[in-house]
Amino acid sequence: MKQSAQSDFYYFNKFDLAISKANPLGVGHKYMVIRPDPGRKDSNLERKFDSAIQAIDYFREQKGNSELAIGKFAEKSLLFKDTVATMKEGKVDYVKKEFQSAYYSPALKNSHYVDRGKGFSIEQAANMLQGRAVFREDMMSRGGEQYKAWSQYQFNEPKDKYGNYTMKQFSDGYGFDLRKELANYEIKDLYQKATTDKLVTELQNGNMAMVRAIGPGGDDMPLRIEAVPRYGNINFYEMSGKPLKREDFLSVMETEKGKGQEKDKDKNKESSHELSV
Image 1: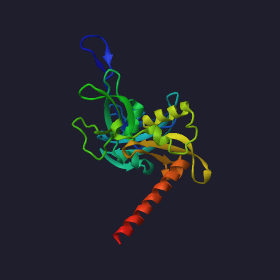
Image 2: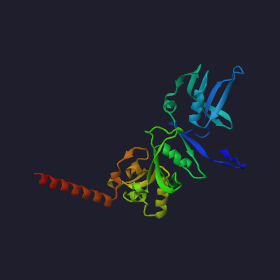
Image 3: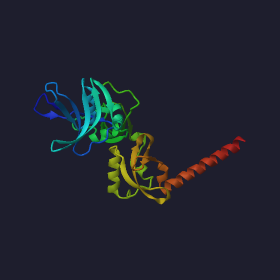
Image 4: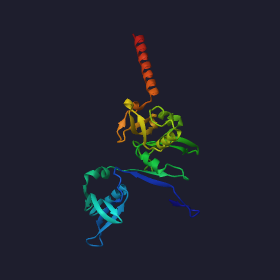
């Protein structure tokens, strides 16, 4: 937030987002960093956090003895405490096994800028940090021209001078049509415009949308799907997150088309072989 130099108005210019591997906190739970109070013997100082990333960063800044814990509270009273890391004389000497992935894995962080109310939403930004692409119709070029594009972070590329991930974009010219791609699969209720519009919006925001699809053997299955504009297709997953073959959910028409294309390829190979002989 920044105050205008000409008025008393404040403007929302950017937000910072970070994602860690820590499990979500339960209701009434908070992270706690506990350390001895230097001004009072046999007394401790506590600082509470909702964010695992902020709690871990603050814990690592400590110089003496300190404890990182997850506590459950009811009306400000501590019901129980689970210690997940400890520090002695500025050195970490214990990290709970179940918390090690969250503690030692670097958090993914990025800043997102907002220009007069336009920019990526928190929902979109969170999905981008998880590796998915999002679609916006109000992208603006440096020349001031508006355009539509899918955007996706390039985690394998160096960050820019501001410490943010660079983006790869796929505009209309790239050729990915989400609605046409959805129509290639046996996804239920796509014949209803309202249902299709809702699904398209979810996928454009980078979500892993839940659908019901007809799988192998005619089974009606609950699945999650995501849009992959880079490769011009959709990924399918079990509800548990296990990847599935998208070919298993192709519509009958697309399956027959694929078989026809394979036959044509075989004929071409035979013709080519005969000519070569």
